[in-house]
Length: 257
Image 1 (cartoon, rainbow, N blue to C red):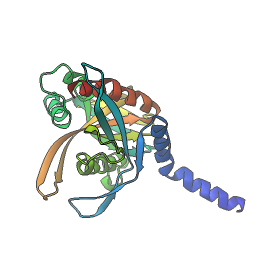
Image 2: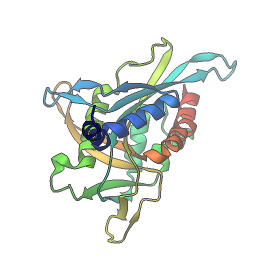
Image 3: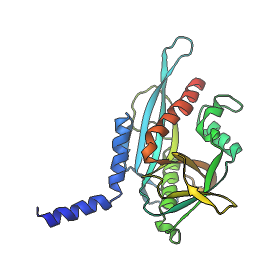
Image 4: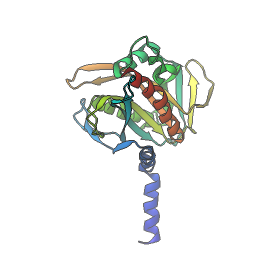
């Protein structure tokens, strides 16, 4: 192969979002997550095939509190959309709807209302969330990366969240808990502003949440409107995010199992 052809191929690799996608896959595998790459599923609204970047699962041992014997396993499932952001993007932040956040945690996990362990879940602990966003590409929402990521992420979440363990075959999986996640290459071009204000600043956190009230059609083509929280993670700090899920959510859920 001549140099010109090699350079062209290298340009394709470097320009492709698959490069970043591959980095996330490699990292998760190194941290012992089982990964399914770009699975397709059927969109209930359009009857068309859609694709999500990654589904990752990892099982955490649940022990009997009295004897310390293994009762089974808690399966954590990540629905992940990867986005390489190369243009300035702004998120508008406001107070989280704590009531609906708690309702979501209680519905989607074994955690219970008015319980100290429920308050440890990271959905409940964070006070502020992003509710709006905009970038240079927002004039064309079809090509707006955050808008696309939200739709791809939540459509896949709705389809896959109650599926049996997809990647882990242990018959003693007691419960699967599913999280929608958007991983960005970094936050260097991500900025935040409070709703009602005009002063903006760089995003100082390693990850934050998007609060979305999402309308969709269910399997019976009924109109649904549901509250979701999506974790938005700086890839540079993906390890820190995994640690937060394990030390806060997983440990709290295991106690209630």
